[in-house]
Image (cartoon, rainbow, N blue to C red; front, top):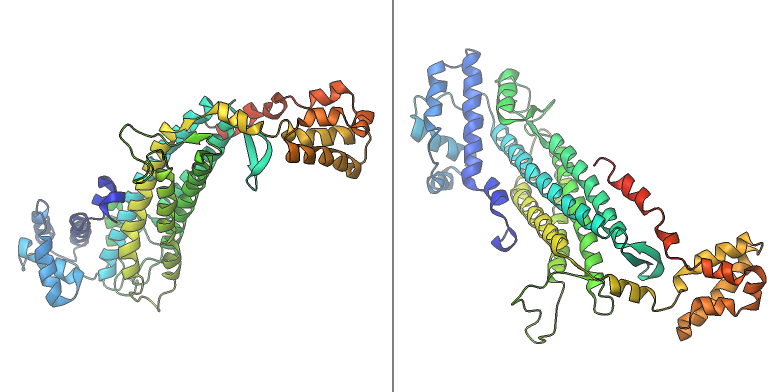
Length: 435
């Protein structure tokens, strides 16, 4: 991923230095386990750890790979240069390349998951704070982009909190599912390596042994992992689109923070554009781009082919780095989001009282008017408000058929905003119950 959309901690997980360090640890721990089993001399296993403080030479490994055309062999050759060819002769005994590659990849994914979990927790804290801050801030709810009924800005934040909380659970589940390792040999039968070696390596690396592998760890696990990233990305876009809508000039109920010296347009100095949330929409597309290839990686030939390999070398770093950046950016947007309660009320009252139409409809049916007639009476007065922006309550009070069923007091009572917010505390208690 390009540096513009990257953060250093996540990038470091995918660096060649990190990868080769994990490869080394896999090989060294495997040697320890084989020495304990008496398969190889203990002194050879101990000799491998002589490279523990070595910084592996990436250029040298690349040089060897240009000749061998095999990345794991290139690494093992370079490792032997540090350990000594005689001392290193038992390294990788009974193992296959995928034992190293797949186990390393899953270590990297679990580390990436830990960062993403932390990111989600930070975002949840920001959403919760803003939800309570605006718990009673009235705004109009919209369906199809059209005014519906009153809600609160706090409920909007709470809704996004609940969605991201589900994503946190999904991410934890995805981490647990991907945290497996395999040191099972050429086709996964342990013919040339004892299962105890796998158990030892996995324990040292914070993984659990894959119950049954072929030459590779089953890719349904990875498909589920990247699908989870895709869902989280879609949730990010869900929040971003809401903010982008609220920042539209004719809406302006909320807006991204605009810093001193910031410029919105090279041509129009007046512009304040929702560039961060537009960026988040784009980044979400990039993360979701990894989902279908991950799904297609599940079907491999027999015990293994490498059609998945080139895919994962790309989507592993790109999807996790991008999602990490996007979650951090969204947290900053939420933290600094400007909210305009007065504009929310003004927008709701552009068509005075119109959003109370359902209350009047229900009152008429309660008063004995059949639903079809009640709908007709309410709609004909509502359409006048659409056309002339007259006051809905005044139209109802002037309608003889409506007045035949409802008194002035009964009509006036239907325009109490508090009616729509009476269960906000109940919803908050549900959303934030664990807190």
